[in-house]
Image (tube, rainbow, N blue to C red; front, side, top):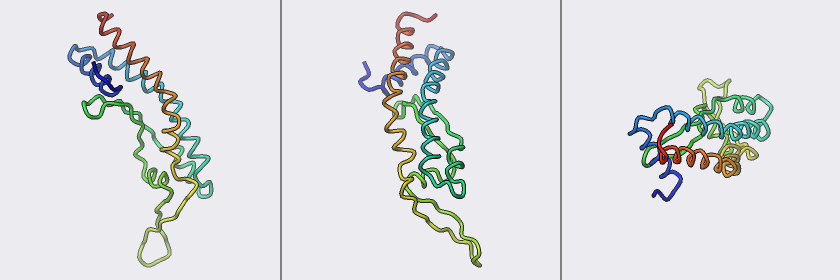
Length: 151
């Protein structure tokens, strides 16, 4: 029996894959994505609240594309929330790099944003325990279906 939730997710996904139950796997992934919607809304709210409003950096980061990935690999099983928008992790670390115009050679300047540090990671770390029961409940539901036989 797998000991951690990620090992259990991997075992369930592997069983579904080997038995050709793609529909049930899609159902499980959709439930995971639905349970993470409050986290995405909270991340967007944190961006609007903690990032600078002047210049629109807060709205730019709040309106970015945020993707939920359900990974089922042996070493990478889990639910991940990611963004591909440039500069998101810079602002999470408390700075932003931007071009400085008016010089003969374009340069990038680093500007510190102390209040913004952790707007992404702290929000997700604080709120992720609230969605863990929903994810575990869905994993238990699918495991019961596998154990009892498919629909």
